[in-house]
Length: 171
View 1: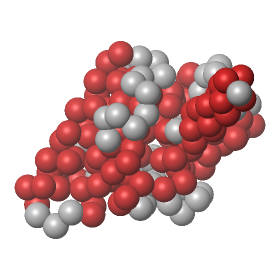
View 2: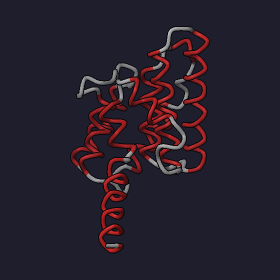
View 3: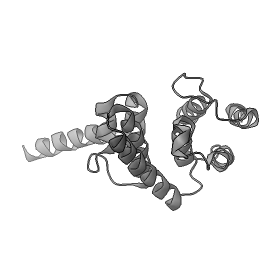
């Protein structure tokens, strides 16, 4: 009886761990307020630098769902701080740079959050090939940055930057 209970608990725990993949959850629900709030909660996912970055981008996107300008700015600034802290810990991580690029490329210009676009593109392009992540995610990141998924704007990227990102698909 105890063995069966242990096996059941182990199976349930494994199922929860698989459902708690912050990367997948974010990309499947990035425009849904309730899913963004879940990601932004500190205790839902195990603590890691990657979770901190996804929590950050989620907070910046929650700002689109609130009404008061001061609340919008608060969410945006909190999220931006989380992203910056994650990048300070792993400055060459292309996924973290991808996340910050998504925010920078889609933030209103008056927030002044665009000064790292060039360096983020460079680090993303230089490090994605050897990054330990599936090809599925690499292509997803590339497509989102180029706007080919129609989810994100890419008007801010220069033609040269777009070409460098596009070239990653052929490597």
